[in-house]
Image (cartoon, rainbow, N blue to C red):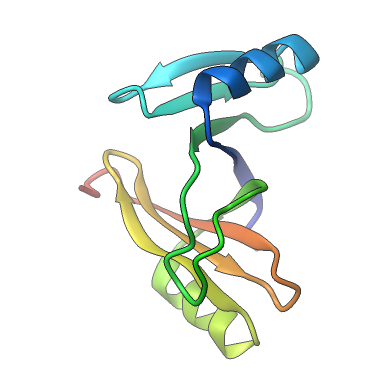
Length: 128
């Protein structure tokens, strides 16, 4: 049974958004990769909760061009293509097509029947 393992905040201005979340929620940020992505630590590992990331706002790559304006929770799955297909077969739609997250895995965004976006992540360190 897939479970949430990560969330992402999409932001127009990464520095401004980081300052907001540091000030309001005391979250800690660390640049990952080329600087276009920031890891978010929401609390100590011995307490309930998940950590996340912040990325520059993206437009939807699927059925509509509305940018992502939400926190996106990502669910760990064993086959991202199969789960995208299941979402489509059950009335959902594609929000962002499958993409490689180098060294991590394969990520796709889907929309449920209510238009809510969620991520699907397949672990694959060889993804490039």
